[in-house]
Length: 101
Image (tube, rainbow, N blue to C red; front, side, top):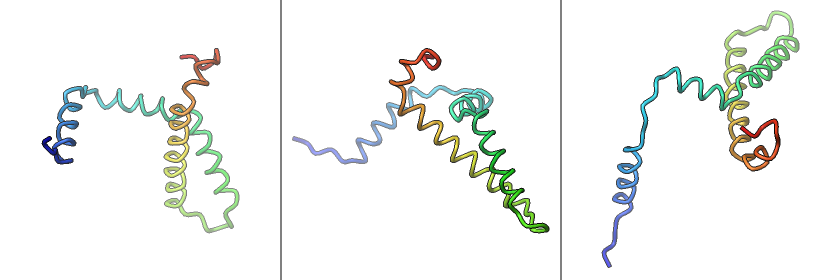
């Protein structure tokens, strides 16, 4: 039996999967990410975190870069959590009328 190198297997998989790639415009990809991240819900979480940051800060210590970093990190963490939730709860969501789509 001929032994096949791992790199040959990975190359074959990559070559096969590359034939199924569909090029979509950037706007379509952005809308898909917004839907996956549940952007409306995520924006509420980020907004409340920014308000908490601004409220709890001592006078004169506001740092715009830290606020921007907080918002970016909040967006990524909350969006990833929403995306993971959609993947893990497919079966449960298909049973509820509100989330069947």
